[in-house]
Image 1: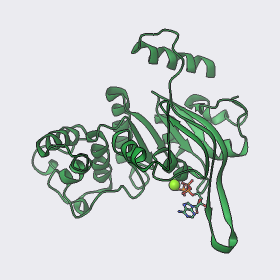
Image 2: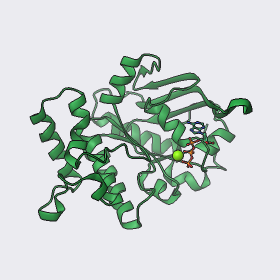
Image 3: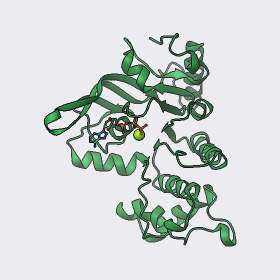
Image 4: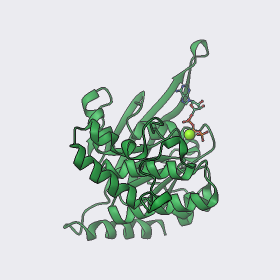
Length: 276
Ligand SMILES: Nc1ncnc2c1ncn2[C@@H]1O[C@H](COP(=O)(O)OP(=O)(O)OP(=O)(O)O)[C@@H](O)[C@H]1O
Ligand SMILES: [Mg+2]
């Protein structure tokens, strides 16, 4: 089953590319990644230790695991907003040099878009200004940035008529679901190839949860943007993730060889089904 799933992904990937024997393309490969935090006299607490895993390019990957197991820490490392203490992270063949500020800045600006728990939206700016922000920083012309922002807002459903047009609204006047949409529109406008989303539906009701997750799935399918998301809700992870990485399980049972996560349909039996 697992092999069949990988084969299917490989076929889907190769549909768009010439070589029929092309191997599975990886979005991320983490080798021996460790990360801890210092607590003064209490010493250093290790959150991730010698973590080895791969995230496949193409399918949506959901990351689950108990609170405190290091999911956000992992996403920060993937998004280069924090660096590992040791180990190697490769994104689409490029080794992330965490000490190279220029490379990391370019990576954060051009490759990944992060939708973190605090959403990273400026509440004093209106919606369209927030979406244009990364483009302004990148030095794109105001006209171009505006066009991209409007297109992105339209695709997340915030550019309707009358009260449905939220482009001029202040962030603090928006609902939780609408704020999530602005964050997604910002990611889209920036042209990021990868969206890293930390609990994108954490504060939403079930209606908005489905709306936001459907949106991420559409972006993944139609725009070819890779999506890696964290969820506390294993149901959501299974419904929307094609591969599930149970971080707690991976930490307790370090895989001996390449680990891509568990295909969603096998997730419930993952503990018995050791994927090596
Ligand atoms: N900046 C920091 N300084 C010190 N400790 C930290 C820091 N960030 C995280 N930690 C600790 O590292 C551990 C993992 O935190 P992390 O936020 O990655 O967990 P998580 O799996 O995302 O949890 P949750 O599901 O609650 O969001 C926790 O014990 C947390 O207290
Ligand atoms: Mg977290």
